[in-house]
Image (cartoon, rainbow, N blue to C red; front, side, top):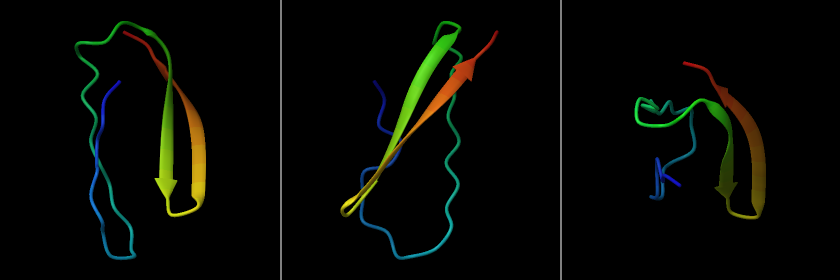
Length: 47
């Protein structure tokens, strides 16, 4: 598990770069939580 951002931010658009060099190929899940909103996306890492 990795935490990319854990801070309060003002409304707007943000981009976060994730380096998966140390991870194996496979399926990973990304969860976004903002207040009451929670969304989970499936990511595929291929090397």
